[in-house]
Length: 382
Image (tube, rainbow, N blue to C red; front, side):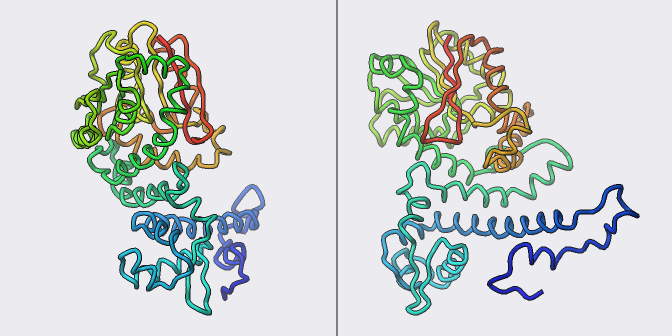
């Protein structure tokens, strides 16, 4: 079939779809729906193209091309490459892909490219925590890990955190964007008494703190309180300590620890866990450790993925397939790699509430914030 500018995905699908093996009455109990097959084929051709756009978007974010374009008027590929400090030939090819995606506008008369302000508001730092170019990096990361995950499909087991350096960098960037905007003024007040107690001075632990940015932000905002971050990644703890030093913080400390081994009783007035519980090898044990580590009247603020525990409820979730994919490639796999339960990203609100109850928390609320549609916020009191 000849493809031109007016060819639809359905036209392409019809041209590539061979239904000869489904001539129906002889091979199936129901009449074969060729239109439904063509519609699905068209959808997958669109997915193929969109996946390529995701990779190009990830490249544009990591190379700074979106940020560069946002500062320029209409410019040639040479001007854009010079401004970004990049190779022009690669930039020109990338611009072609972004133009075909209708993200960048191209003027063929003068050979210039322009990133509309409305698009910059979605794909650059101007979007703050809603910068969707950051999330596109996860598509590339999943591609990098595909063959290793396929091998685990065949023989079981999982992968280690150390095999995902790009994922942790991406997650740190995503979390920092949310926390810089909303942690102190939007997230912590979900525990109504928490900001006041933090100002007075309490002991706080963060479970699975990663590179420690959340702890450091809280320590900076509440100098009368004392903060401890726990993570089993030595490199992440090193980054957390380095940031605390740069910020001149004396009330933030970080310990390398597998939190399944956290053995503290009534040591903290508040505990936080930001998108960390579902990754744990044994999340139920970690939740019990947290409950034990809290003093009477203490608060546990747990942030985790906003989804249902029921597959059927996630069909209409706009990013439902992404959540199951990132779980397959990372979150479930790293738990299994530790000999763990493999809870997975999409454990869901219902199971989260049940597990918090089983850990000993009798007073739990599920909340949310407008600036973060991806996460649920659980406030549990001891």
